[in-house]
Length: 120
Picture (cartoon, rainbow, N blue to C red):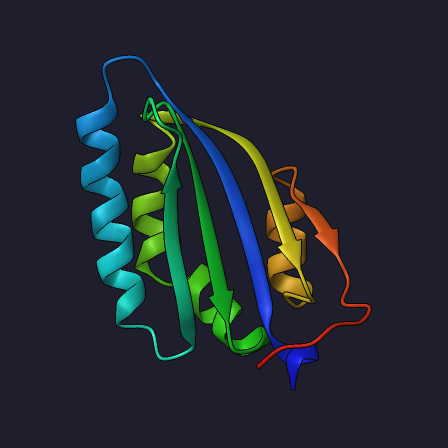
């Protein structure tokens, strides 16, 4: 049921001279996320000059988002990531649950509730 899926995007700008460190951390985050049963998408996109990146994450449900936020990707590696880049935007699509909403909202995240659509 598409209403249960939760997506989020994170817009990032890499600090000058930190591209290699950024890519290393992004690779680690991706490997950790591959091992999370409820993570069905964890995709990085780059601008042509590799200064700006977008991370698009997709989770099967609220429990999967909560598990990700409580796990090592967020608790151990996101703090390292923000040392080498700035977070320019952070958006959730679907309900991530009260815990994640409170945590991410405190970091400036925007939330968009599911309205209508088609998912296959």
